[in-house]
Length: 167
Image (cartoon, rainbow, N blue to C red; front, side, top):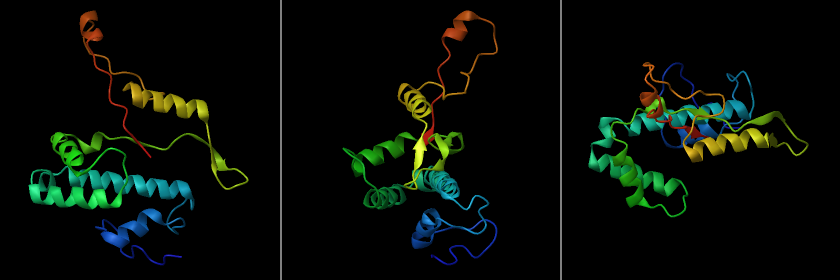
């Protein structure tokens, strides 16, 4: 049991171990789901806040802060064929990116645990979601953006919206 992770109400800035405990906690008394779905939602909120903070001009345009962030991120995560230099390049390419436009999703499951305590994927729905992300097409259930004009040439030139982030 972690005990109190956040004792205050309202907006709170989490750092270090407190942030780690917030995203790892499995049972939170204020969470109406009292489940892994609540934990996933907290993780998504944390990632959204982290992305917003990282993409702020306070970090993104300050080379020293950006370098410290990328080094800390690299030391805390794992990725194949990506190092600090690639992450710095990625971060700098995101200048002007709207963090609020990122959509977090949970992989589709049957909604209850199996006998081993694991969620069972809805394989066809999951495959459709990953295909949309890979192909950069609208997510399942989303319609592509249509131009307001009735000009068919404009309609053919419309780009598909980006798929978004998945946890």
